[in-house]
Length: 442
Image (cartoon, rainbow, N blue to C red; front, side, top):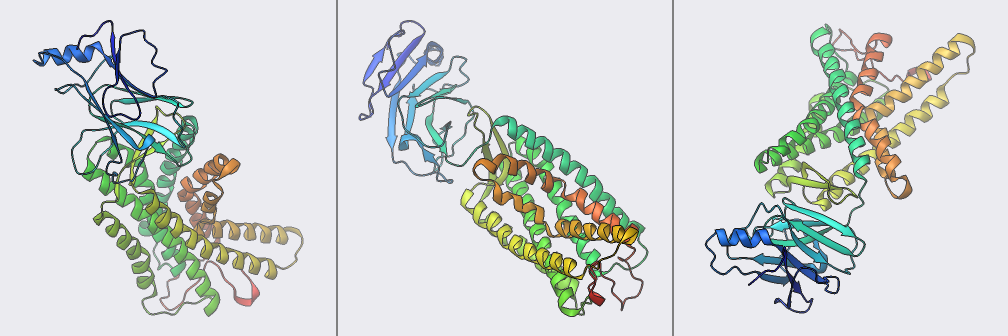
């Protein structure tokens, strides 16, 4: 096929599977709903590969097998381009245009090398240009192409960058302060810790490793190792679920204290709650790992040419059911406990004046802060991330969750240095952080 000028263009009519028209450079492509423009460089590469008569074959497929993520394709179609040899690393890109198309979501051009029983889409080598109802894929290689639609709400790349910086700074500071807590607890203490603080240390460990896995997640994903990425995603998911479980355990411990009057006498109590809080997340993660639901996951923004990839759950349905569903149940339990404790604090607070009243108000404020911290109530802002409140809720949630470790440090330091109620040398006596005896909550 001869090519005049820089471009040779193959136009596809929507109802046919064959090339319908070939246009020279300068012809108007806007009248066609589908068009493929091939650069002269592609033909030159074909000639250098001992192709005596360069040709271009364009195929249009409908209703092909869904990929592992059940992705939604624009027009439910796949475009394939063949020149009889491998063509890649083009300086002048191939343009695949979709004109006057109706779609919902964010379009993103992807390619597939045709291997495997199901498509394995990647955005490598393709740039998406979207203007209204027109979408153009600019790609540097030949293979199967499709436009994937992301139906979830997205945020701007600037907001995503700011949220990422906040999270990285918050997690880094949190890890530093949590390391201090662990150092103080394991190396500096000389007496036996009461149950409340022992349970708090478990929560500290869960948050510490959650921050750690988040910070190294991007570096593991950049290695482009699928096995390593799956392990990274599973580890991060495990510590996220473990953090949720320890929030719930803190609430359970407070409720149990209220029931038995402040002293818990259950045989192997700490061992039992530890097995439950660390073991249940492990069962969930192993199950998802065995069915291959971890891997590289794209985070799309409103700027279609910029995506962020991390190692995480590849199935959005599982993410909503397992993570959001799990935290919804945990939040319902912890928030109910928070309201009960807050009600008791209000009902039993004595009316005092002067400095004593100021001191009692300060102590009450610290109790409220401690409850919010150990119960993870502040994470509930994730439920407001909809509509006009979505972006502000993202920022509040990101700040509070990222600095969770720092808040735990403040809580731990206050009760070890100012209250003096967290350690007891007697194995038969337990002193609780929250006391409800004699009608007082402290």
